[in-house]
Amino acid sequence: MPNLDCISKRTLQTLAGERWFKRGEAYNEQGQVQDLTVQRDTISAVVVGSETYRVRLNCRDGRLTYACTCPLGDDGNFCKHCVAVGLAWLDQVDEVYTTTDESQSLQAFLLNMDHKQLVEFILGIASENRHLRDHLELKRSRSSVRS
Image 1 (cartoon, rainbow, N blue to C red):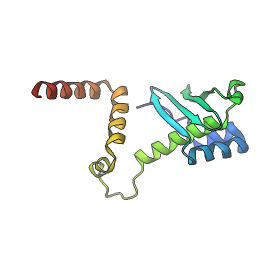
Image 2: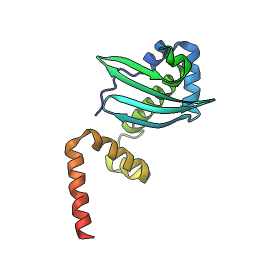
Image 3: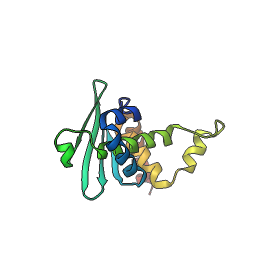
Image 4: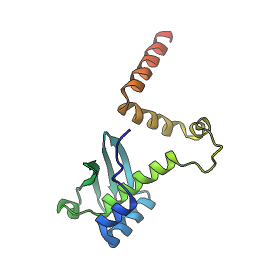
């Protein structure tokens, strides 16, 4: 599991300031963050606004590092696009780890995920977990032999 504990709403607000945080929050709420991926301890995404910008966030030694291809980001500033990606990540984490009813089982949670979302979720974890990836590859190879 990636270690992205340095990303919090408070950190995003502090780095961005009120003006850029509010704009980034609006971008996230409007669904302008696309292609969000996590590899190791790095989040990458595209933010579509008046232009399309690439954003990268990661945690190094407990500190949030960032890059964005927008003019503000090119100057080394924490921009609204970085905020939007950070908030989109936090929304995903909340969605996966928060349940509204304590009696809801893990099985019910997984059954309620749409197929594409479940596949992407499992592939994301398998990319970080060699044992799971090997297990899935073995299952795949066994099923292709039977077909």
